[in-house]
Amino acid sequence: MLTITAYDTHVEQLFKVVRRLAEALGPAGIPYRIVGGLAVFFHVNDREPMAARTTRDVDVLVARRDLERIAQAAKRHGFTYRHAAGVDMLLDAERPKARSAVRLLFTGEKIRPEYVTPPPEFSQPSLTWEGVPLANVADLVTMKLTSFRLKDQVHIQDMDSVELITPEIEQQLSDTLRERLAQVRRSE
Image: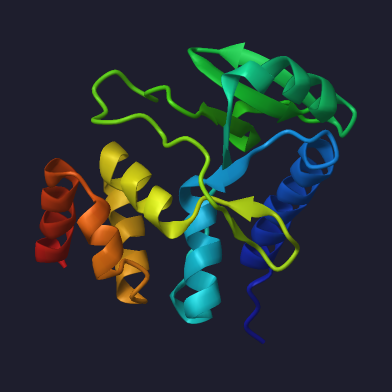
């Protein structure tokens, strides 16, 4: 019998982290959005489950002014805040490995100096069926085209393949990001 236990286990572990994060930040009134590959997974899965691919970590967009509150709220839910190698993260207090950390990204601050634009300020989120806020597709497309690493380009292809990138979203992009979108589409 063919099983996909390892995949299912990994996805469930990611979802558990997201639930714990939601239980920590939501009741504390701390605005946040799930971003990165996991947000792409949720959006693509809603449109076409067979086209969704998983990611290995959880990225969350927050406001730096909330960092102390985030660390306190997260601690009550089994996370430990750590800043290491220029990265702010929440680690599982029982198994503190950077590879399985929740990576904190900050609104209005460039993730890397060479990036074209910083992550957007909070806009209207999309919600998972459990009510967890995700970056909406327009914000996610902007972030992925800004990062523009190979995995970001694959995420753009995934969203484009299920027609999540609409003409309205394209019109909102800067000329630089619109050219990057065209470059991804040419490479398919």
